[in-house]
Length: 115
Length: 114
Image 1: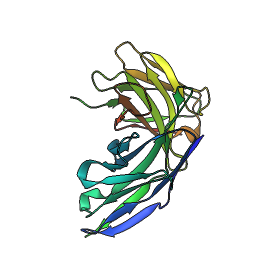
Image 2: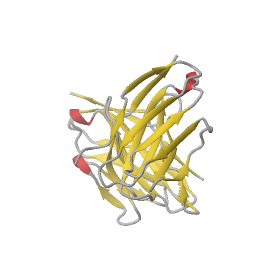
Image 3: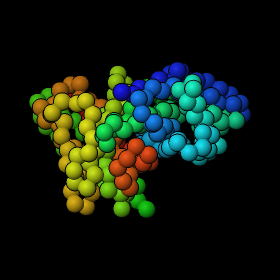
């Protein structure tokens, strides 16, 4: 069984300040973890993914995330927010059981960026 | 490369009807997954097709079905529509099937059931 919890439904930051979007997961397997972003009326776009290689993962647009197994966390960060970062962010856990899997999405975090 | 395309983009149906949604994956991608997105339940995995075979299935009733053709295009069918089926249906493609695969999402089909 697996689950994912995005700890904040909304995060509000000022442009130029750091961004932290929190994600905790639970999985019986060695999962892959993903962060996707969804802009209004658009499909989801991959920001980054962890697949059991380096625990610090760098993604597009200056985002990065660190896989911490002891804390079962995969928080997303960015040093300096930009207005264009305003969107919905989804943390996803995907682990296989007997060759089958069901990607599990968090409920999403809405990032609001103030000028 | 062209991205994932979904048709139609918007659809209005009434309860009891059935609907078919179409998804064309990125050229060369062999896996297609379908998701339902609603405000109440969030994003939920419906099923995945790879090389014309259903590989994985989420926890949805049998009214939701799909298929994949030899050119990797996929269709999703919902029979006997219910009001609760109103949602954004997203299709995603990837090169192969697997937990590490990056999925590329289409813009979605927004279905409204009246």
